[in-house]
Length: 610
Image (cartoon, rainbow, N blue to C red):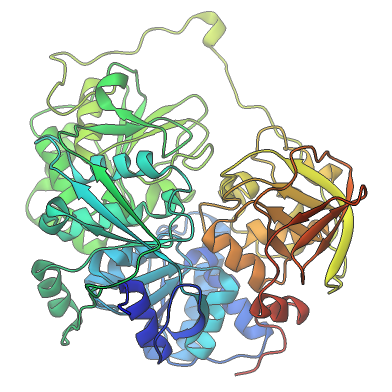
């Protein structure tokens, strides 16, 4: 029986043939921690008395806060630097840029290889036909210490793109069309392989753009069979012979899908949801305050050159702020050498150090309450890029909108920019309200296979990690401090931490925990003493983080439509059942042997020694 790309890559790194659903230990070729999460990785290693399996394959990348402008980020970076010096680990410091891009450009990984990082967009590696996965602090600590991690081989979906988009459409527009097609969880748990004439002709930056938004579709990874241009690039970057991996002709796919992109034009995602996508023309004329061009999705040289072609000879609209952040220092230097930075400056842009920028709270790109932003990033969840509203679009659309002062496609920029109108008295002085937060001490955890507790029922799908644990608290490393912030960015549940009591159970919908790889989104519930999380499905990274933390989570496809807050239920991890006081039994997925073993010993790293 033939194998898919993901089955081949994981099989090669497990030392045996594997199929979808297999639980395997895989060797990791490159193990990366960022300034976000890096300090917790170091803490896990030290607290558990572990060493480093192979310093030559282990790296730190500081891309969330290149300026160290936040004291806690600066402290975390320095902690990682000191640890790196002790262990002989290479640090790509604050002058380097986004770690996933460095991994490709510096040849840390090539086609057919594996990498893990504390970056939830490590699946960008699918752009070169490699396996990349964002993981939480304990996973990365395990990879640092042992050189491998456990992984469940995902099923593969074969996706074919039919037709060619319009001449003014970009890879970002096609990406947004894919996110609209699949929605926030249409690829949940899948590896996807992308095919078709349009796919074959894509250059590396375009492939990066599409792969980077796999996470926003719930997927494990979007894999591109590497073409010759990608192979040549990776051969030069790695300095070694590349052995690409392609699917067998008789590979077995769990699903197949076709997406027609014929005639597709410029697209954008409306604020709040990356999958709420419409043609740019339908939002044209919407007044904006700011524009951000950059991120791991659209911060490469080709992306910024495309924006520069629109901006050249123009000025941004009065009162509009344009922020540009290259993905890496190499991109920054190239833009400096060829004069593109001068184009940006003459247009009125603010240019930042290479890095993640708007997706991370420590850099330029955040917006304020009421601010309307057009961004080339991959996420526009409420609060993710600030307190304002964020539209997602291509670099060309973003640049055109900065000139126009309103949302506009690059081929329809108005002759005169749209200026701000003087606000009415009722609109002045609008400010965000302070949010009340509770606190609770973490109680000692028991490890029973059955738990009873009262339930909190959250009837909502796609609750992302920013809603669970907002990125403004990411510098908190003490789990005892995390519980007070649980769900305080989820509308209607801001006071959850005050109401929750030890022994409570959360019942919720599909794709719980989608979004970032932050471990705190799990640990905040442990701090509160929540004894089980029951959802119709979980985000892939969140599921790993919870299992590795020894936090009991269970998937139950139908969680009971008439369950109410305060009702007591019994959850059995061995049988996968939820039993109500009425005697009704709801069937879910029992813990696997791996999950049960990790849970019962108190976490992935508990009791382990190098």
